[in-house]
Length: 277
Image 1 (cartoon, rainbow, N blue to C red):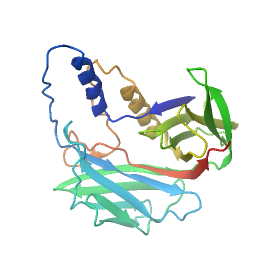
Image 2 (image 1 turned 180 degrees about the vertical axis):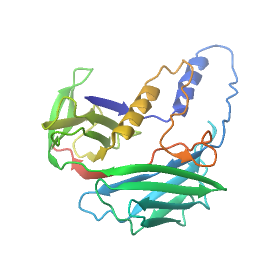
Image 3 (image 1 turned 120 degrees about the vertical axis):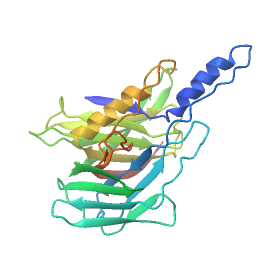
Image 4 (image 1 turned 90 degrees about the vertical axis):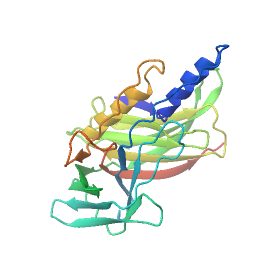
């Protein structure tokens, strides 16, 4: 089964509401809540095929109010990841506030890792396995009919699913015509052991455009998390806003004060494709 996710920042829901209100003759001032300053931990260990996976980064920030375009970065955290053998990989803060870097990480497929972040006397932890991904067999370019009847470029990747086990994949496509990446979630319920195709098209693509493709193997838990993201981003903008989606990061001092984000570890195919005549 495939699920296409077009991610948008949730604050843009507010923009749709404002556009609706602007159609009225009277000026209405909208008093938006500023919300809390929940910690956000962006911790993706990404082992790109063809690299040793030793250079990894983690970003830590806080939620911000609607009118602040840039979330506050969080400095001063102690960050490390531990593998099942007890080996520690320390992430040191760089000159860029909120960015933590490790240059000696040891990436091992199917290995279990635990993230540990200590900040302001609170400790956040999460555990996951590093999931493998099959090689991309080929990339194909074609044309498809758009809603207007015009032909649009379509890019497809093909890969073989591993047989006799449940597998989950996340593919994202980036292009200069997209404000945000387009994501495709795939499980192998209907493809077990067979070749799988993921594709991307957009009416604004032209010859010479570069498509950046990242194809990951992910855990079932992260797959389910991303499905919840889909439900949120495709919800009715005029309905009650959904609650923040809770990931796998736990506050060991106060479980109710969890951090947002999801600690995941993925092997990935990464490639660039240039559209041709």
